[in-house]
Length: 361
Image 1: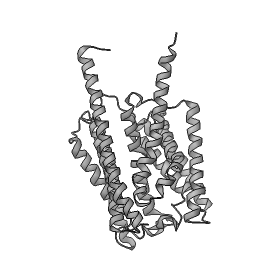
Image 2 (image 1 turned 45 degrees about the horizontal axis):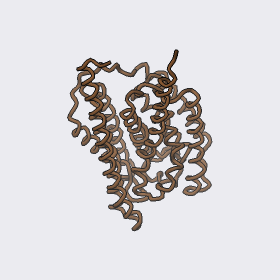
Image 3 (image 1 turned 180 degrees about the horizontal axis):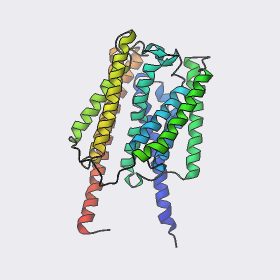
Image 4 (image 1 turned 45 degrees about the vertical axis):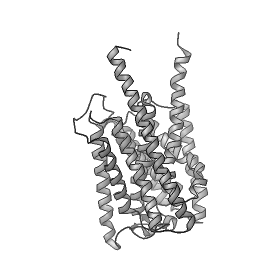
């Protein structure tokens, strides 16, 4: 006879893991970055949860059900970004939103530099890092869906509502009356559907989840070195693409065609870091401690970048005060919480090793 308690426990853990990811996604993606330079984000944060939290949970659930690994997360993260900036904010084509048209080339009405910065940012901070941290908190569910089919349908519907809510709240106040061209939106939908099919059908076959004992044997630096690499890569990537000022305006470097140089450098850096961390993650030498340092380095780097930008290009006393107080506080909280997570992971590993020694099941 089935054990109801035994069946209920994994479901409860799956529910806790789902809610953890729902909360972590907007915290990592928005609160620790945008809220430093825009105090209003602390007020509107709850309205971001349906889009960020539900959207990233949907990406994670689809990836696990398709048998995919981090490459699938990356491609679906691209779809996620297109939904947010293309349909929700409409910042991919708006000439006014975030002054995105001034960041760099505007090709056929498409804000190319802005898009590049947001793709790299959201794939890492809105998708990959929250999913990695949730996996560390709930390791037994790392390869398991958090939701049953009904929950998956519900979270998909919530994501659509979140995109619609984003569309009717923020853009009308920043770029009133603007509507992205319908041909662009239709083409964007086709691209998103094609990328989703590719991510769920093709990528898992080419890049399946490796077995625990698999690995290339590649050497991996010590965890603090991995963390420093993540900090440096984050600062350089954002520095190459994000314009100066608050709100940002103009290209980060150069004018005219010169802007393509930092864009190319940022793209090469992003691809190189994905390949490097992908290579490290496939090595038996890569531990959870390395993952924690990598996530922590990236999170500290992107909060630090915004603090520096606000201090170098102050707007008003309130914004500067928020940057000087909440920015360092968020960095400190990140370090402390990830240190606690590292201790928890180390203790869990120690218990597992002792159970093997004494022959416990």
